Image (cartoon, rainbow, N blue to C red; front, top):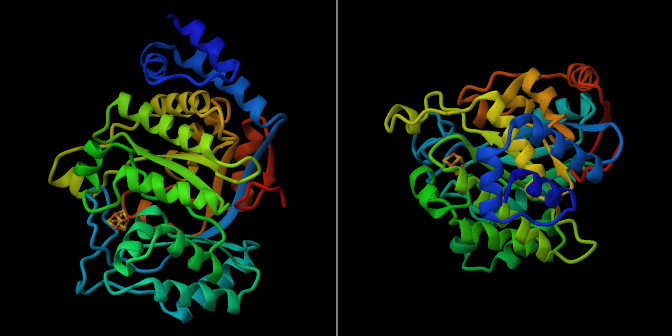
Amino acid sequence: MVVEQLYDKALKLLPLDEDEGVMLYKKAPLDELMFVADKLRQFHNPGKNVGWIIDRNVNITNICFSQCTFCNFCRKKGAGDGYVTNENEYREKIDELFALGGDQILLQGGMNPDLGLSFYIDLFKRLKELYPKLKLHALGPPEIVYLARKEKKTYNEVLTSLVKAGLDSLPGAGAEILSDRVRKLVSPAKATSGEWIEVMRTAHKLNLPTSATIIYVHVETVEERISHLIQLRELQDEKQPGHYGFITFVPWPFQDENTVLNMKLHIKSSYNGPDYLKLIAVSRIMLSNIRNIQASVLTVGKEIGMLSLHAGANDLGSVMIEENVVSAAGATNRFNAEYIQSIIKEAGFVPVRRNQKYELI
Ligand code: SF4
């Protein structure tokens, strides 16, 4: 099969298999991939609208037993600079978020062995009591696996209690690469790929909106990147009609600065702009049933962010007020509302502000 036949298949929204995805990634010229992906973007999101959002990352705690080798944000229990965010700090951060016009926090952090399900239930309830309009995009599959194990509960029970307490949507955090070979090297203590998928399957059955991610350019192969995309697509295929499922897909390049992966294992990020554009385009082609693709302008910067919008992405993500995990590993791009809109316009699109469910506001 030649790449042109794969383009035709993709444009008919037929699912490409692993060999076909790998062939596109390795053999297809970038300009052709971008052309096909742009056509598919227009199918999934007709017109010129490009989404953006104001939200804020708040880290619940930096204490984490997982010690993933790509993370230099986490601290071991007992570390002098370990913390658990207190109510006054939440109030300060959320007041600032509302003052800037946002209403959602991305609540993440480490898997702190001292914090169980009741801690998160109390936290979510308290935040909703203080700020009834606040949206909580919080935790991720590894935390759900950890809490289920700790409390001897099912994923369904954990997620149901968290939703009842105020969880609005579940980020696709901790997917890294859905390959247990890779996970053994980068995040051996975290959820396996099967567990990650099972939590998301449960969330989709509960109709909890979720997102999907990938962290790439570390130890994975192209075949593993493509397999990751296919696993996401197959899970999305299972969702009931009318349920949210994965609302969006967000690729994040690995940032290597000061990480164990770099300093002890000498693995550097192999990120480069053209390869990021290729990943965006191939993702748009492979993920025929996920409507939105978000370029991580926070990590790739203005120019590649703009080009991503011509390679299949239809969203530039967040004016992120605080993002400690990525910034601790070297991401330095910072944006305000005016700037992110000007980037979208400069790329030839119309900026539209959205919420976490990708509804226009
Ligand atoms: S990436 Fe998340 S789970 Fe892994 S060590 Fe850092 S905080 Fe813990």
